[in-house]
Image (cartoon, rainbow, N blue to C red; front, side, top):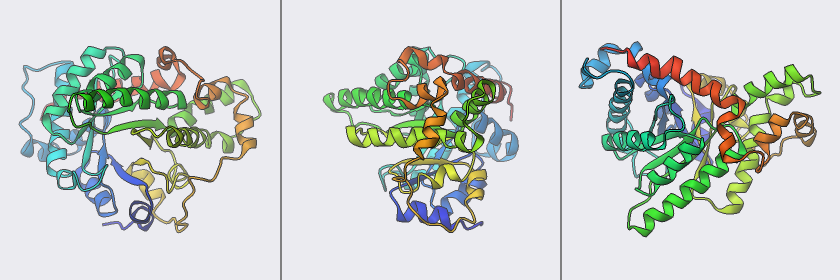
Length: 343
């Protein structure tokens, strides 16, 4: 087992919570030994583990009948894999801490505006295990589904989310749903607002290179960090019950620059490896991003959309540059692959 002292420190000595970002069982075992208490997946990661370990999954899952085709087939693979992981790998941690023992399962990325379809899928996933968190896109339709599912006590998360306006909208949707659940005597599930910090950087890098602004590479790799730090301050000010999750990280700096934050951090094996030799055990969540960097990034209207709390309205989320490229990746490299998998 590769010992990772930085992640052990982060997860045991600071308020930060470590969730593993991969569905490969052996990778999860390593992460848990280093402090991970939860797991994030997406359609690509589910497909990757089924293709990498078919004999293992054949031995523990009932499988999907050949009669089940199309979207229903992809959905069922996700339900079975995450259900097994929730019960057999994370279940022993469930209830031991506020964000311990959970596994994420994502709804159909092909239909990011189909609220009713997302709600039906969420109920399917939730029926597999009570410690499954359902991931919805941070679109208008996805946020409506989050509110409806939170009102029924389901665990919810907003993904395909890159901006301050999106995570604030998620927090508000979850809050409304949570209050409805309490009013009905239902125990609320958890709520997570994902901000895909590295994917925001990726998109703004393209914008930066195309628009010839004065920002540089060293500036653009701070964009996602700047956005989530701004959101974190607002979350604390408003006292939301929803928690932020940095995800889609591109370097160890995306985690170390947020160390000490009261966040649930999605950390993939590659990012964990980049933190392996980090010996600077310092909480940096309260260290601001250089104002000069923010000024240069602000030359791009797309950065302002993502950084300003009022940068976008809810019906504009689906048109933000990172949204469709990420949904397309989830569809082409994940969901569509799952439709064709046989064990």
